Amino acid sequence: MSRRVSIFGATGSVGQNTVDLIGRDPDAYDVVVLTGAGNIKQLAEDAIRLRADMAVTADEARLDELRAALAGSGVEAAAGEAALLEAADRPADWIMSAIVGAAGLAPGFRALRHGTTLALANKESLVTAGPLLLAEARANGAEILPVDSEHSAVFQGLVGEDIAAVERIIITASGGGLRDWPVEALASATPEDAGAHPNWDMGQRITIDSASMFNKAMELIETKEFFGVPAAKIEAVIHPQSIVHALVGFVDGALMAHLGAPDMRHAIGYALHHPDRRHLPVSRIDLAQIATLEFYAPCDIRYPALKIARAVMETGGKAGCIFNAAKETALDGFLAGRIGFMDMSGIVEGTLDAISSKTSLSIAPNTLEDVLNTDHMARDMAWAQIEQHQT
Ligand code: NDP
Image 1 (tube, rainbow, N blue to C red):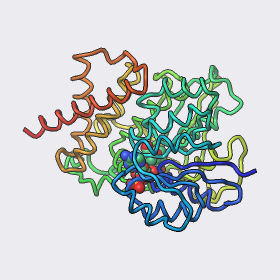
Image 2 (image 1 turned 60 degrees about the vertical axis):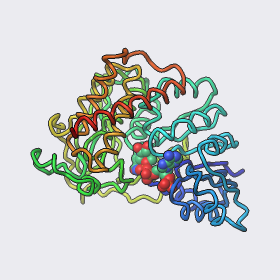
Image 3 (image 1 turned 180 degrees about the vertical axis):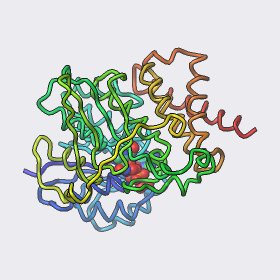
Image 4 (image 1 turned 135 degrees about the vertical axis):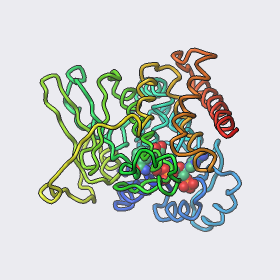
């Protein structure tokens, strides 16, 4: 019997890799919903090619365009936030959560409510609402499978292991597109400079987050939330080749590493076929050809985001939600030319400080609505920080 699958964020970088894997074996899947936002052409093309039941754009103003692009295909069209939630209600066995940003949160929660297996690429879900998301999955007997390559690597390293025997988790970082720049030059980096990645082909926002290591900071928090391991046991190390994605260290001193080509179809494919392993169309590693794998500790001056993430992990509660919202807003400010590359961490720290002077950060949000309210409040505060920065 075909598996019913939906892809949220199908037109993005992770989404397109998922479309690629599913499109290679069309008879094995019954595609329920594909979603996108601005890229209507891609959304419609893939929905028709994969014979999806429905295509949804998050942008209500583009509904007519989507309808026109799907005319005569039999694929249903819908638009807007409510339509995204309704799409998550459509029965499916497996859903890819690959919308970028906090917009990915609500559809993921909705899918879990139905007990659907959630392949989670959307980092923001765990960082902003980790305990709530995991509780929702538990309450409904739903499984969450990590798709971020580092977390997929840790997840694979833990198969058959007792989490109590884990002494440390090490996630690797490429160091991003600016890793060889002199620290003094970073303040003048433009979005184009920071948006070029040496190893991975990803969306623009995550590529810039990789250069600033806000991406790794998010992943440290994700690791703590998903695996329930204390912050002190989680480390990040720079590994320029991006071949080792993560390592799990055990109490007997053994360190198990996960190696793979830097291709998201590894982690997506693992989540798609879990618990089986199937052939994947990714390049194989030739260790003799690679010859050298380098590792070195990240510098806090170059990557202040990591230090902020440590404080966020220690605080818990709503700190992750504020961190994510402030980080997204700071990135908007950087992309708009309102602040410099190295100012982003100051905006995030300033936002956390400003909110902590009014309320205790360690009190966790109780509901998804609480999370979204905290997210909005933190974005407003972060914008205020950006305005102040300019005057
Ligand atoms: P992209 O920017 O490439 O794609 C984002 C997707 O979300 C697109 O389908 C986009 O539609 C859609 N989208 C954008 N805004 C909204 C919105 N407001 N509401 C609903 N949908 C929206 O992102 P990535 O694929 O790079 O990343 C997706 C998620 O996965 C992120 O959380 C990222 O951190 C995470 N991730 C990404 C990895 C990667 O390799 N890229 C690796 C691991 C995790 P459209 O394009 O049509 O506008």
